[in-house]
Length: 129
Image 1: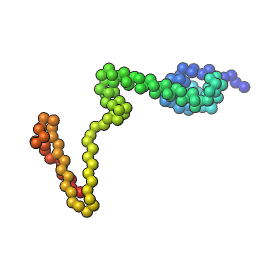
Image 2: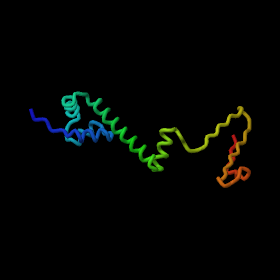
Image 3: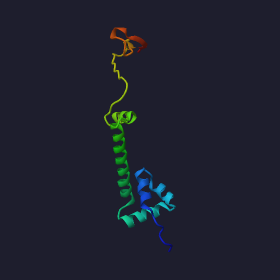
């Protein structure tokens, strides 16, 4: 029986936090995935799935904290991203229209520049349904 290869668990932790799979980690370490899974269970006392889940959660938490700090520090891209994903904000205008079946309806959509007064709206498109 050949001796066990050393496993650098710092590499394993870093890769799992980054979202890598067990197969990817094992390939980096030059071993079969089953060998990695067995060694994690033997040396860390937990199944590989639970171990990976902990490390992925740690990576997700680090990303969230970093993104939040960047947004608060004034990174507009980070601020917009968090506003849309975390706060549910979005761009655009939603228009809902209900008409009775078999009736002719004309919808006029007007757009105006912020400098235009409401009476100066310009019609850009007409739709008939």
